[in-house]
Image 1 (tube, rainbow over the protein chains, first blue to last red):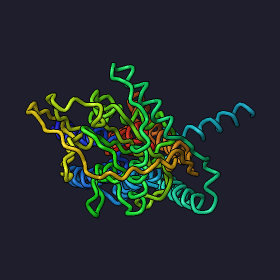
Image 2: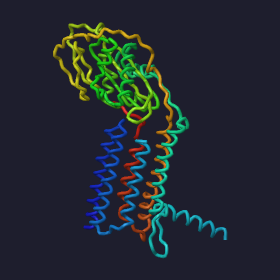
Image 3: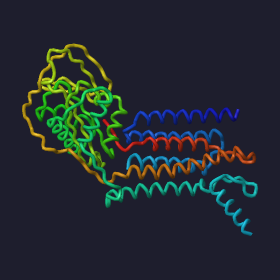
Amino acid sequence: MKKKHDLTWHLFMYIGLAVGGLGVFLSRFDATRQFTILALLVLFYLVWGFAYHHTKGDADRVKMLEYLFIGLIAVLAGFLVLVS
Amino acid sequence: MIHKKVLHGVRHIHHHFAPHTHDGVQHHAHALTLVALFAYMQIFVVAIGGVWVIKMTAPHILGAVTFSADQIIELTNVKRAENGAGKVTFNPQLAQAAAAKANNMLAENYWAHYSPSGKSPWSFMNTVGYKYVYAGENLARDFNDATSVMNAWMNSASHKSNLLDKNFKEIGVAVVSGKLTGQEGILVVQMFGSPVSGVNTQQTLAQASPVPSPIVSLSPLVSPTPSPVPSASLEPTPVAVATADVIVSFDGGGQEATVLGGRQFSTTRFITLGLVGLIFAMFALEVIVVFRKEHLKLRSGVWAHLGILAFLLLVIWYAVSGAVL
């Protein structure tokens, strides 16, 4: 049951990433739009992480900070290449 | 003794990059702790700041980029030849119109086919007295060479349609450098036309709509609506000619441009792929090690981290330094 719950959550996450990937592909040669999609995907990742770990009951400060730092790395890396 | 020291060293390195147990407690790689992730974040902050400072103070460090309108015209004819479309010949009036459009884009600071003040691409053709039956325009910005510009246009259905349109007989291109919407770079304006003199006015003309719509010019000029979706009309279309008769000789403006900072994109892309790739590899290693050692347990959230990092790597890998419109 727990495994099925995990699988459903991760499937949802990966579908979100796939939709974002399609958006990035369709926005080739428009770096600003690609960065916007990346930022939205990072937001989705953060909300997903918060909801997933709260539902699972293992949310703590360290886990949330880990999500936040990885999300910020993604945004900063995207900004460096696509916008700056 | 030496053997022990080597073993200790290897274990120390292993603990940096892979999950392990210490006194019966599982620890993940030291290089993936919160402190380490915060440090990677700071590297990107410093890189963004560094690029900004270099661009402001010594952009030549990031290399110079130069390419010309002639190269764009030559590559256009190569692509047309490859696809069985006829060669387009250089028209100085179209080049003049393209240069005027490029300068107007820089002056009014817009990245669009139509200016904020309502000027259409066709108005620039009319101003220089170019009389046409069909016309089209492709735009590109911030590319590092003419080949990249051409590849980007060929990868976009509507731009490709313009490039290979058999209705077009003449071409004019402007390549100018300047600051557009806050970014210093090279702007390319490519204008196609089919002159009135080269067309049988009795024939039925099909109207196609690449970027923006090729149009039948009317007097007075009617502005078309740009549409990325090609459409066709087999209705007979009357051919009328734009009234502007001012012929301006081409002065050579917009023929070549150089901009500093050309290697910025490749440099930042290389740094980002390296660092993000390293973080991704360490999370992937965590998954591999945990699956191989039964006493270790995979932390929840690792699959999500791998997902977002893989997505980021794909975005950066397929990123291109430029935009087309």
